[in-house]
Image (cartoon, rainbow, N blue to C red; front, top):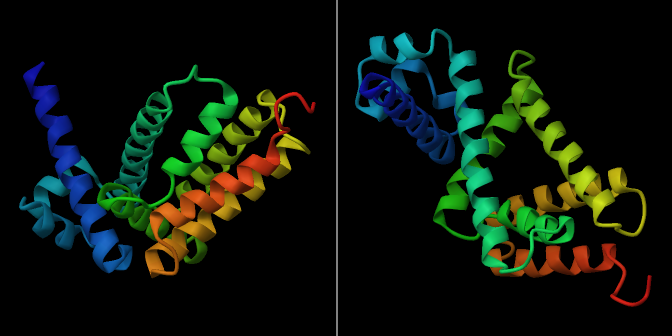
Length: 196
């Protein structure tokens, strides 16, 4: 049992090194050797857990997904409301914005992964993750009875989130301003209580 925990800790240690590199220098700098140096372990150890860079990056993307999932869970719980589809959408989408150091690091690393898919056909995991998120949000928009087509609403909301993520990272908006803009957009997606 303790051996399994140690393996998971090692994988997390290596994943965190990739995240730090991606957030500070981009994924092009995340060679296996650089990851080992950043993690404070040997190259051989990194290669023991991840045989190829593709395998490593796919695992790190799943790791980032788990971290985002925890942020969404906390955001939903913080609303203190029943976890209705509408509550989930507000919490989940705002949790994707870089409003603090943790979310900034996650968004920078995820953006680096997504950007890599544009130039490296071997890194399709970033795009499939984005498509899975879009499909989940479309389902929730449908359950929440948003105005308009749920798939279109989900795609539009994710496009807005992506644009706001970059705008916050570039300093165009603060995290709080981005949340306010996203919330305003979501308010328009849902009928006011008592109006339909």
